[in-house]
Amino acid sequence: MDGDWRKMERLVRTTVRDNAAEESKTLSQTLHRLQVQNNLLHYENSGLREALSVKKKHKKRGKPLDLQQREEYHSGAVF
Image 1 (cartoon, rainbow, N blue to C red):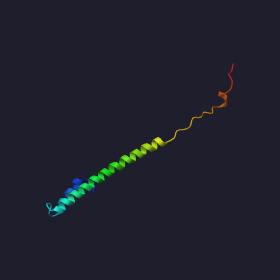
Image 2 (cartoon, rainbow, N blue to C red):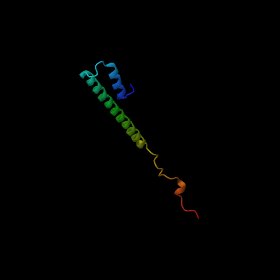
Image 3 (cartoon, rainbow, N blue to C red):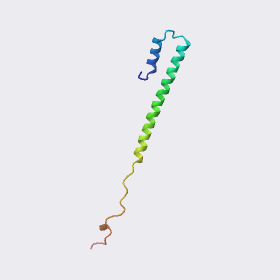
Image 4 (cartoon, one colour):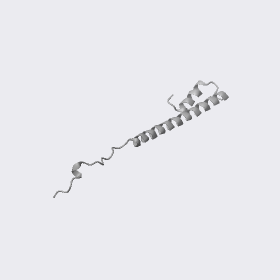
């Protein structure tokens, strides 16, 4: 299934003979709980991936400044 708990609920109702039975209700509740947990984990994973991506971008190092300037800048004044 694509993750929609309503579709799963419909599937349970159509396949289970006695929808009023305690086992049917338990199955439905368990499927709903598992689907919600799955969605939460997907959101958490996507957030962690995004945070890791941002961290990697910040980790890139820039080029060091060339503080040793060329010799022509250190020569005396020209008149």
